[in-house]
Image 1: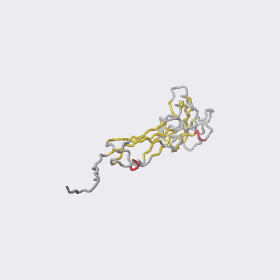
Image 2: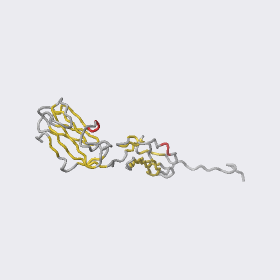
Image 3: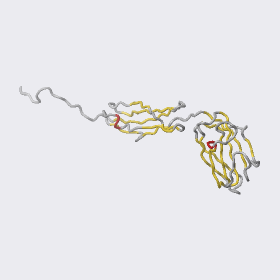
Image 4: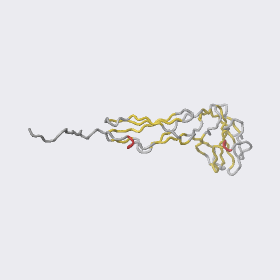
Length: 212
């Protein structure tokens, strides 16, 4: 915009979830006068941006375009939340409220929803393995762990074994992990069970050579 402040808060909102990470792009209609760009989010809904955690991004010496990734703090109020983008002369202080030297402020609305992202389950070792027939399963189950976008590394991964070591074919081990918001991640390790190639052994009762 050309004004010192423009609000798009009443226009269509962008959706975002707690803990989600999104790309944000800022474009100017000129590259004259490099700019300091800052992005704030009214995390606690108090209509100011005074808390340090409400500054989501900062970049100085911006020309015509600026792109960055921003993460929605997990403490953000749900519902309509104000996002403020400010641009001012490079090297200026650029506070969230006030006059932007040779720049402007723009406000946007985010509709913030609860965390809906399932934990990511990481397999240690290959995701498809071969298992000789009648072999213990721990030979191929080399471990897993789960990472959540908000809670970090989770303490528990549940394992369900869907493998019959005595029958040739493609089976699996299913791993699941659930975060405190109830989102469940699922991943499989596929196990290719080989055919039994060991001939049975016969045991004789008595001597192996008899005379009649």
